[in-house]
Image (tube, rainbow over all chains, first blue to last red; front, side, top):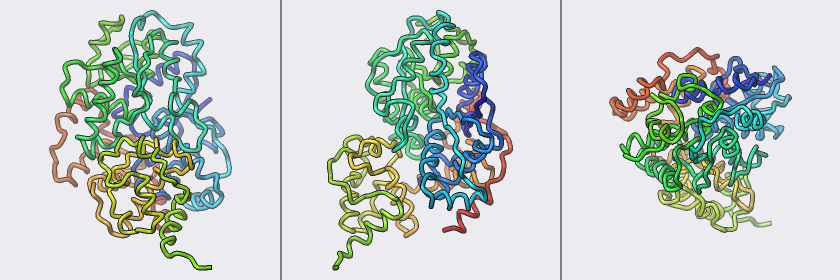
Length: 283
Length: 177
């Protein structure tokens, strides 16, 4: 059994991600259960202003997982990055002692932190075997953003500059992954709140690259990337839009999930355009 | 042995960040890959040169670390293995501690409100975060259409589930400083 760290967005702006992860895991028989008593990892805000908090907040969750002795699965790229970075920092005995002091508990165990893409990747052949023809002909641009693969001094699950895990998953699910040059560009992250104009420009550029590459749909594994790319198109009222799905929504579609199962009606940019390419049912 | 006083600042930054800023030899890789370079007063490598020269004032009053979005492109590309984005965190923290006013005060405010949401509830309610951020900016009705659209589509949680308290964790971090 694995424990799942959902993070704060998966019950709010990234609800379709949470829902589709549950659906896909159940469909594939992957046993995951929510980490009990989890709290926020601190995200960008903790490390932006307070180094101690940026280690203590993730460490609190790591300590719970350590106590249970299970692997920890993380979907949100920001949570994944913060948990990994804190874990690496805790290898330093001085940092570990300091953080243990804050938490009031020792931190000497070890927990395997896995990205959801790794967990799905381990099921690649099953996905391939059990996929339907729903996604045949659909051209997909996989977008990784920053934090899933760029973690300094941490051995990741994929190449930092040219990750391919999502492309392999997309192909296994029956769609066609396209090569395009912006898959690890930055969408602007929290700038969509702090400095809208810049974030709009960054996100719109990524969507434009996907459009030029001929993508019918973008997929991502990061809640902020999904939100920003979706939001930018909605905000700019673009006539040619590209729907932005979570990777688990697309894999779910390939495995026969319905619009309801995968919350496909929740996107700011409508899925109509995608549905004319593939035999996907949308509202 | 005599020692240049300008090294004090470099050593302070290195001690705080745990990163060897002195290794930077101006290869420009960080600046080349940086998505925010157009907004920055100093490119990351320029800022590092200023640190090496001990120009505390110029470094801590720069806008560079306020525009850094922590995408970590520089950190994973640095041939000298300096976690540059992490040094940006150090500089931001130090700059606020020393009372330099940020060029992006709304970034500071956003992060402070975010952390206060975590402190109070253990998890972040996006609705609370945005409402408080809007109030802070004195724009209570900003993004109302977007908020409504997200709410309508079921993508804003109205009543977040209760999480364990992290108030003591925050308190202890504060005491440790």
